[in-house]
Length: 135
Image (cartoon, rainbow, N blue to C red; front, top):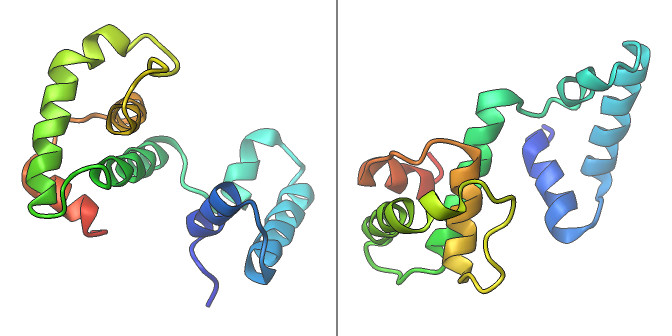
């Protein structure tokens, strides 16, 4: 079975490499798009990538996992909940109109900035735990 299209796209973005499965996915997706009439708006669908709200949630969750890597290992979901709440109260109101966080931002705040820019951040500790555990 073929890996998840989003995993294949992440592999390209993160590692800048294309293995055989990724190459097959790209060729099949672009061929389907070309045969479908090559409407640019249809490319995401032909590549079977998530779009709209689902894509925003996946992106937010990926950034939340990156943020969690900056926190101590024990009770990571609780620590992330505290960090998210503090960030949304303190930094986000001043940064929300920006396209990038300030250059001097910590890795944690950079990740939380990109998470907040993608989708709603009003989550419980249990929801954050599920995100961190891949559920």
